[in-house]
Length: 91
Figure 1 (tube, rainbow, N blue to C red):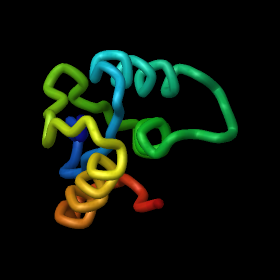
Figure 2 (figure 1 turned 180 degrees about the vertical axis):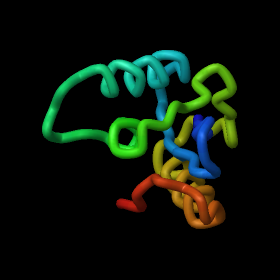
Figure 3 (figure 1 turned 60 degrees about the vertical axis):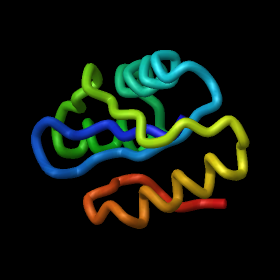
């Protein structure tokens, strides 16, 4: 699944993808924010640097895709199409 989590405080959003249950991945994002680690995710970095909260309950599914490569391409497309995405493009 390709998904988007909106920031409650500004127009930024995070676009990501996972093959697992979406709830599991969202809970990992929430746990990452609570951890004090030097290697932060872009979600936890946005939260900690700007003191902004994400709208976890309204995480949106952008696309269902079981094929990993197609899912990664869809994720990249949604990131590129969203000017407010804090997500990083990588291959």
